[in-house]
Image (tube, helix red, strand yellow):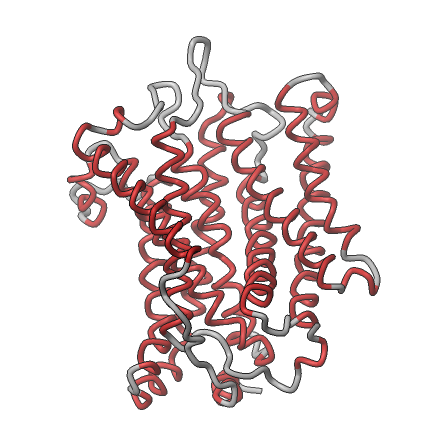
Length: 394
């Protein structure tokens, strides 16, 4: 099968807007949350970042960066993963999942871009990133910022066929489909660079990070855990969409993806514990410290899918959902713990997110969910009918 045959095969899968009311109780609640979010954002820009956050010189990064950026883009990797499997590895059976995954990824990266803009003190100088005169191109932070923006631009191109199809521009859509694999491949490269760079940032922190988390394999561990989180996000999105919209669940396809995630998590755990043993840090995880406690909670959550997905019982819809949930939560905890719990900048410094920080993060999540609901109701994102290969649906 050639790279172009996937597009031809996928053409047989009809997509359509699901329709329905745009204003419901649920979307109204989301709208109220987004309204509160807008008020807090206005206060942030009117009175400065200190008016709505608990950030300080000891903790210059907080909830916005760790959740909205490090976690949001890791979950957003689902779009690149499914698109890579479908277009580059020529697995056309996964095509029904491509558009929802890409939309989820796009909204995740937009959320990350907005949170970075909110977090920058001198946001009016953000355009300096693009000028060699100002940009520090040897900086890992510069690489992360550029990767987020480039990945967002690539995702916009990847979801463009949905808009073209909606407005009847089928000729232009077919031309774009012929070169889409190039954007998919480039997007995967950018995502790999970005997620490994998140691990590199921790390496730069040096002794400020607890030895349990400060290891040389951080770029690899962040990349592998991102793949697991991306696969988990695909499964969660598919499961929740099937439940909410009363559609059949692509259980067989999701089961295959989760098996890959199971293998990735096994590699992650072996590499992590092997590194702790080689560096002589393993005894530290048995000490009664906060860092050790969260480490074991993480490890249990990472290990849970390895057990849940064993055998035929592991392919049941309930098991897949629980395994995906634990996989996603484990990846989230890993990032929270590494950047906030295991971070010790010195005596006298403390941090806990303010209500303003929480309001903006919750508002961004609500905005993402609301946008996804509007998109699937107005644009051809979800399949009109399921392919015959979905025998494994439940």
